Image (cartoon, rainbow, N blue to C red; front, top):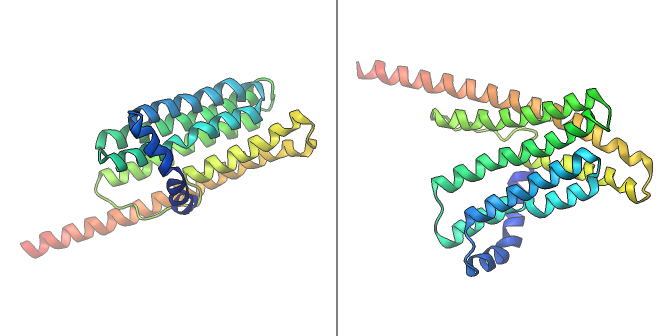
Length: 221
């Protein structure tokens, strides 16, 4: 849902910056790699230590590379299958680092095995949600469903909650600490619903495609 509207807005906002990078000779692939490295560093350096505010700030600074690199490729007229593949693959790496960093916190100093398991479920379900769409499309199906909680929602919910929880370091009310656990449970539940939505959609589309193919064969005979 957020992906549909927020992406268009931020693409317009970041277009001048993308054009600036192109004029400086920076390639879209370099932006993709640097952005992912920044997200991974922010998640795995700060989150396992419970420094959620600074981790969120660092991740947010780099996460917009996902919009900038594609914008650069379109402006330069060099969009390619390789660029799309690299971008999609490194998105999965970045997502894994974010939820992996949260899981490490709860497995260590956070001392909450249940939330550690929820964070791991968020990591795994996010990967599978993305896989179902990619796999469905690879066998020729449109997978015409957005789903309740896609990547944009997972990141916004988790990072906003983590950042607000991290404000406790600066003397903010202690109740802010409950936001991150609530967010993780919400993302986990939403990801499960989205996974079911996509599986049901692929099953329906596959059945329709098989029926159409069988009818075409029968007509040809």
